[in-house]
Amino acid sequence: MQNTTAASLTRRLLAIFYDLLLLIGILFSVSACAVALNRGEAVSHPLYYIALLVAAFIFYGWFWTHGGQTLGMRTWKIKVVTENGQPLTWKQSLIRFLAAIPALLPAGLGLFWMLFNSERLALHDRWSATRLISLKISRKPQGANNEHL
Image (cartoon, rainbow, N blue to C red):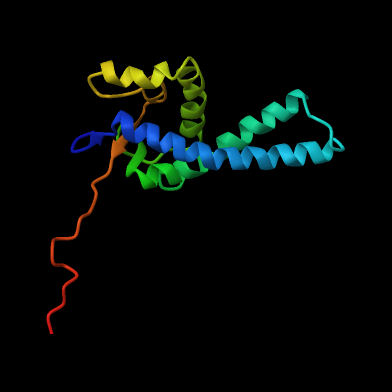
């Protein structure tokens, strides 16, 4: 992909943190439904954990397939695309989501891999044939809001 800049580690981490706050709310909602269905008792059934993973995938997958940006990514002006700059499909989103689990679990080491990679790709970027790009920040020229009568 030409004429694009890889998203910095700082922007990635900030977007992850922002999205994690949103995802926690969604997972709390799923958990509340599960507890209600279980008559107020704690839930430890394997289907509950699968439901949490599915909810997390739907959260990320929907945003990645509808514009390539989660809310955190929009805030920090980064976007996920395929290696050739195309939007992700649901299949590619699933591969990216599943690849991120082992890449991020051991203390985020798969994410920090980008510091040693010439293309600044994290392990899950490489494994899923996707990349996070930095979007240009549009800035108004000075005096653009000044109207002269």
